[in-house]
Length: 411
Image 1 (tube, rainbow, N blue to C red):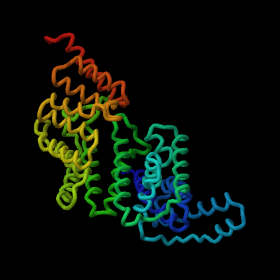
Image 2: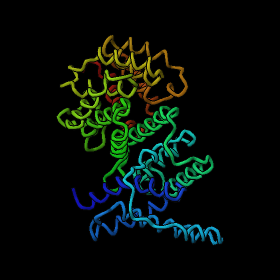
Image 3: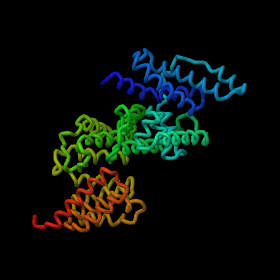
Image 4: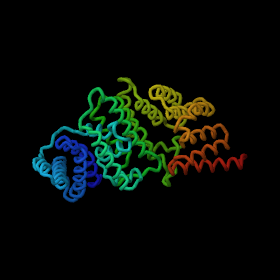
């Protein structure tokens, strides 16, 4: 690992701790986050040249505190604000308490919109700059800056406090946190997604933050389940695209390229929590991913067990996306016609019928059933849907191949 990379990783680890320290000390989370970002930018330059200081968290906290005080003084000329700013004392003795969990709960507060939750989590907890987040979501930096600004306005308007939720609401708040982290992971795992600067992408950030959450809540089975799911899924990433960006379906991937350390860690995590308490949707999805990852070849995949797990998941967390995934398992166990029949039960569900994945799966089942014309039509509908460019390219290749077979049926 290069010295520059070590500095980046350290800054991202310390960012939520510094924001939390300033938020507790000075009472304004948005100002604390802005000041921390300025300190991070200063550190990224100075530490790369001069080396990491002996007490990096204290260094960042001191610099960020000074920036925050300067901001209060410059933006508010009124006497009482000047007096307040002058009364703020810079304390270089940093608390050993880590406020990262409190900060994560704040960024994922249900009162905030989902885009706000995603942006704030990546900026405040992930330590990414506005430019990095913009590149990750493929939007202009000005657009992301406005999104982050609106998110902070939402925090102020809702009078959200920098504090852990009460015991009564902690379960619901944690569920939102897990959902946001999984959304970040999936955003990065989407075919054709772009890496942010300096080699960190959204999947890396989601895994890193979820590791942090796991360390804070070691007894929570769903936190462990989500981390296991991310690791077991991301383990296949080295084999899911060719050098030219063409997608490789799971059944055709070179499994020797899969990240075996991620698979082993994910299985260990899953084994440590399954059976120890209530089984939630992330644990079930991780168990499904583990069955795929542990199969030595596509023919060794335990599809009946996968189908059984999807059946349980449909009871625990029902929804059309789960049914769509269960249909794939049904097709593998009972044949494509059975899969098509199950797809028909969700054909009119809002959102799912117009999803490119519904049409892509339907096209696959029709292809397996020998219905080439219908399969071409379904794949065409998927291409016209909200698929990524990589997915559209893959589906177009399938259409082209089916067209050749249709024109030359004897070949």
